[in-house]
Image 1 (cartoon, rainbow, N blue to C red):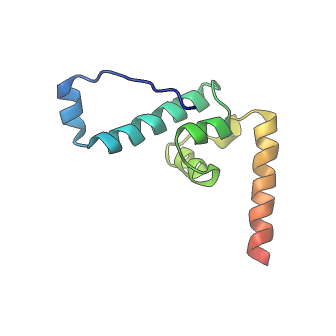
Image 2: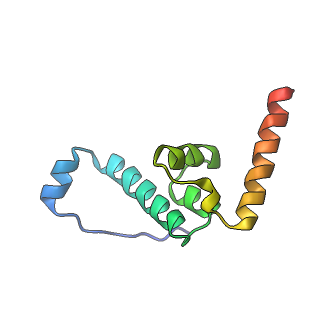
Length: 93
């Protein structure tokens, strides 16, 4: 069961974002996931889950934000190598 986290944002900040509630939620999730991954508070997989993105898209997001995916734990690195291998194998078929 997911936990609900509530944050208070000053009205002036919310208006400045010029986004609806859903867009703001997505932005906050992605930024929190990025920060937690960068500081190694979350593994790559858990950060992608928090961002509600598949691993491939999260990897692209990290690249756009100039964050190396190699900031990951050894087990995550092995999983990513397997994922890349599986994708390459699927592309050959």
